[in-house]
Image 1 (cartoon, rainbow, N blue to C red):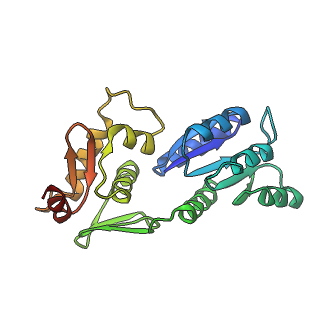
Image 2: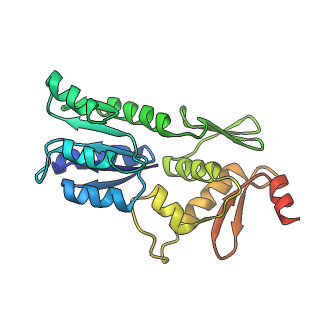
Amino acid sequence: MRILVIEDEKRITDFVSRGLESGGYAVDVAGDGTTAIEMVHATEYDLIILDLGLPDMDGLTVLKKIRNRKTSPPVLILSARDAVDDRVKGLEGGADDYLVKPFAFVELLARVRVLLRRGQPTPERLQVGDLTLDCIRRKVTRAGENVELAPKEFSILEYLMRNRGRPLSRTMIVEHVWDMDYDGLTNIVDVYIRHLRSKIDEKWPEKMIQTVRGIGYLLDSPERAAERGA
């Protein structure tokens, strides 16, 4: 999941970004409205966290421009404006939620997860063969056995399962899971895929994660893979 944080106060930006990244999300940051709008047009985000007090334009103006697009992600306003009128204006302007500063990060994270679930048309529980991923509780099992995953491992597995049978390039995986561009030199994806294979494939004779030569990786049940090969 990729989140855009639109906030000009570096202390808050760093705090929110670190917290979201530790939860397994990829985070981009924009410090002003103009940059934020350009980034929204260039990248498909799963969620936007928006401050109203931006240096170049009011956050409500940014919200309006986001909502004028044909498709737009959920927007959570994060603002020091705590008057009822401000909250009403934000929600009526198209925001999906409104959280007042100062805030507890655990509450922000809970609201982020609610909005992401609401914006996802895909199931909250994913299953491929005997591999199951619970998107809400962030738990993974294979053949009924719990599998402990680090946040990035979980995010990669979720991305692979949501795209079952579809080859995903290393670039796609990096840009979806990490806040970075893939330069073709780093082997970060291969490292994490090895970690995942050791946890969800190594103990079982049927392997889920498959290498697609010249492209990247895909996840599918062996039966489906055999059918495609035939």
